[in-house]
Image (cartoon, rainbow over all chains, first blue to last red; front, side, top):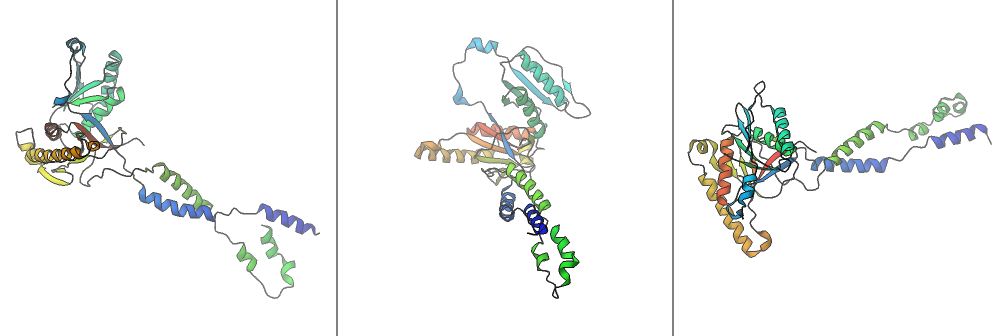
Length: 152
Length: 175
């Protein structure tokens, strides 16, 4: 046997290529399919309920007295946060923009003080943009006030 | 490598009169590695944001939904669209924003009547089949720049009719 042939054979064995045709077939079919069905804008919903007339139940007066109410007012000049116990100073705008970081910190502080409180009332001024209301709602939800109502 | 050497090897070609480039043709391959790299990355990316549910809500091109960190998927319900100019219910324009803002009433008359008709229809269906009970769910797709005043009036009108479970459609930033 020729040495060269032996060496050549073993070399050829290591040179073996993968048969990638089936993989390419899958890719070529899957990629157009996924590209067609791809949704690049994801839509979500923020759910809330308006108070309805049918939902009235027995309200305990004692409960009502202990109830803490948190109101976040949105005004063109800033956020005004009130609870039934005290009114916090206005969170003014910073460089003409709403100061969401301070709002978040303030809400966090209130959450630490009333861990059981889950409700918040948002009260925007009539000319406040929708996007700002949604941002405030996001902040409230992230801090831990998932039940909100909007008051005009 | 070995084959290339053999082709250029003078010993092997010396005797043959006809040169056959067959061997060279047989070993010719496309360099697919980079293409497969691209495909693999594309495939992973597309599979990642693939959703089997499809899109329930379609957004009209003349309105931009506000951005939010909410991640709750939308459910099927009637849609009130508030574009910068019009208020539409399920694609039908019912009132102009300008006129609504000019009026002093909190209830939007056309919207009220349309929603009322919808509710009556839903209730008559509910009489036939209990599973289709009136849930009072309604989706509001509002442009990010509409003032709260118009939103308030739309929500108030919904509440008047009995659509109490309002869902605000937003563009989700979470994946």
